[in-house]
Every structure is written in C-alpha cells, then in structure tokens.
Length: 85
Image 1 (spheres, helix red, strand yellow):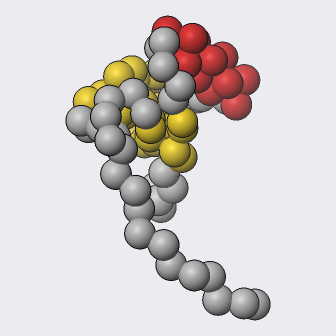
Image 2: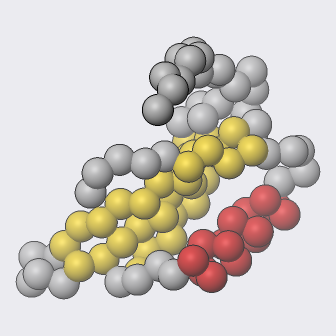
Image 3: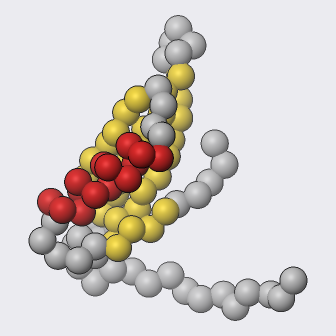
C-alpha cells in the first residue's frame, strides 16, 4: 500500500466555513445508553446543534444536516470526525 502524503490541516478563516460532525455515546446512571450527534463550527468551536437519541440512523443524520445547512446563508463544508468509542 503506498504511503499517504501528510498535509497540514487548514484552519478556517472565519465562522460557518467548516462544521465538524461528531458522534458520541454515553449511558445514564441506570444503564440506558444514548447517542449524540454534535455539530461544531471549527471557526470558533461553538456547538451549533446536538441531536440526542437512543439511536441515530443515517436517514436522521441526512435530514438533520440538510436542515442545518439550509439555515446558513454562506457555503459550509462538513468535516466528519472519527475516533474510537
């Protein structure tokens, strides 16, 4: 497998240019699990929205991200963050 060339991450020049979408999961004291989908503006690290549920299927992610992108006048790019749960 060829090695990938490392490139530095570009910091956004302003607000609402790049949003990070991140899934997190946790459990309540009684053991019931829940998941969150967090939308974070990378320009100022502000949490723009949080979807909370016991399950977040892909249809809900698409519907929510479409809703968020329509609410913004400027062009926004999504950056999916991945990390182990």
